[in-house]
Amino acid sequence: MNADRHHAVASILFDYVKSPTLRHLRDPHSVHKVSREIVKALDGASSVWKKWESQREEVAQAAAPCWIPVEDLQAFLNTLPGPPLTKTDVEQRLRALWEEPHTNYPKDELKDGCVALYQSEKEDGTEMRAIIGALQQYIECEEERLRYEQEQNYRRWREEERVKLEQRFLLGADCGWTQIERSEALYCRRNGRAFRIARSKDKRWTLYRIEEIGDRGELLGNYQGRGDANKALKKIAYAPEPQR
Image 1 (cartoon, rainbow, N blue to C red):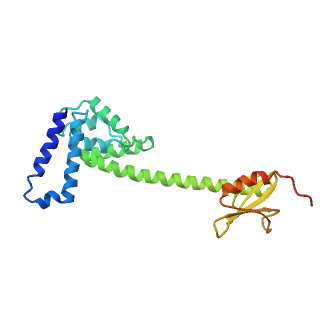
Image 2: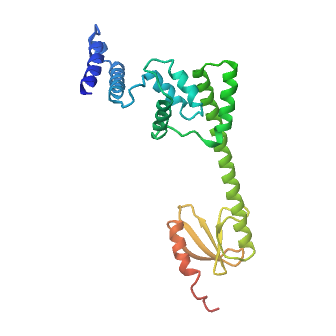
């Protein structure tokens, strides 16, 4: 194995030093290029996947999240340079790729769309590498759509929760901090007592005891952060009411 690695690096370096100019040898772009070639060669020489030449590896990585039938992928990969691949070869290589940090498992929610697109392109006579590209584009678009839907659902849920808290406050029930009609200040009720908190120009939080939303309120304190105000509120809300 070490002999293979040594030979792979030596071959690249011999080709590199054939350059007729010293300027080319010292050129940063050329140095980075030969470095990438060496890393790629070492990865290939040390790989436990002996049947997988670079073209096969590139196709397998691109196809990994695309829901392509294994038998069809196997047939295409066997047209590329390298020893014959069995169905198990392909299945296990895909499984290994899925377990790598930067490769995604095929998403169940995209399976039907991927399969339908694959069959349509196959019937049209599109070659495999082009089908894989089309599937990658489809997956990118669908993932963007799913992300957008998730964001919209989350925003909708946040708004619904805000409205619920607002209604609890307005009905006199205890509740956590919430805006009232999208106010800048936040309101909450603890132990039946209403409080308002607002951020001042110096970025500190000012806490008030209030009787109703519109009143000025009784200043209770200024705090560096809302967490500090909440700690103080745990005591203030349950302290005995002052004698009137």
